[in-house]
Image (cartoon, rainbow, N blue to C red; front, side, top):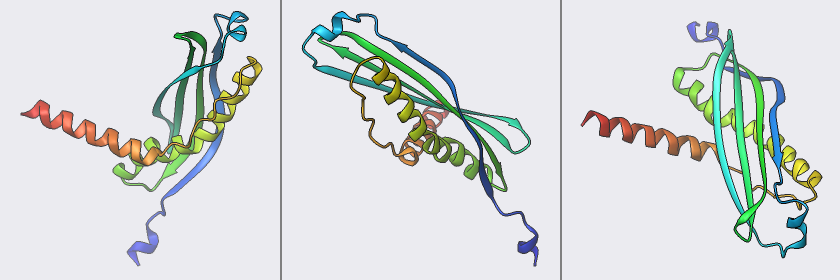
Length: 153
């Protein structure tokens, strides 16, 4: 009986939004006259914060830096945000949801924005491969645990 009265864990998307976007192509139009041999760099970060009762903002921050022949071709930065209602989770489950599930939900939106912006800059889109946010979350968690263990020794 007691289990029936406990609130079931819930996670709901309230809103997905573009928080910030930036595109730079410092060498245009000269870059279009060169042989195209791109070197693609990718940086990915996430952050989250509580903004209300059971309401969390999660932001996926992706930077794509493309060089051609060692020089900057373009840089795209996208911050894809989401508001999620999360309740009934234990602290560990909450951190996992905020660090893996929510960013994974935002990634397709960010990827589409990145491709669209790059195409509008007259470059071929960068087809970002799917990202295993669960694996990244667990890797980061392990790294933090190792750093904590080293600090206490």
